[in-house]
Image (cartoon, rainbow, N blue to C red; front, side):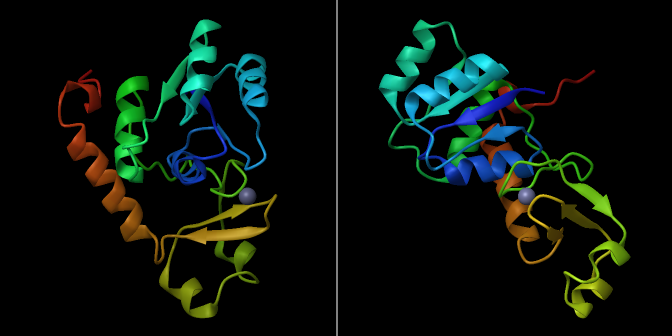
Length: 168
Ligand SMILES: [Zn+2]
């Protein structure tokens, strides 16, 4: 699976890529030269809104995706990135990352998150994830419809050959 570093302007995109399971480095404080050195050191693809950074990356033979200023909605960014990098856009509950810190999330037993989750939520859902670093629990709650809607929309944008899963 491809590893990614996004520039400091693309926090929203970073959170989505993490939810979709992609190892995505992002920091609000990340500077251009840090993005390039991280890409080199950890073999990460760069995603950036900065054309200068994109050009420097390409010149150094790094893989880089430039997000132009007119691509604003997260669904459009994801569609562009998926097309350029050949990513599959799907949610896999066994391979998802914490949107806040990029740690891989573990599926846990209800008992393990009971102290973090309101009782009515605990009763209502069956699958819970836990980020040990953020000490935060996740479940298929309020945001779930949004996640599915975004994935559906991206897939419909990609209805050409680029977005299809390999047929075999
Ligand atoms: Zn976390």
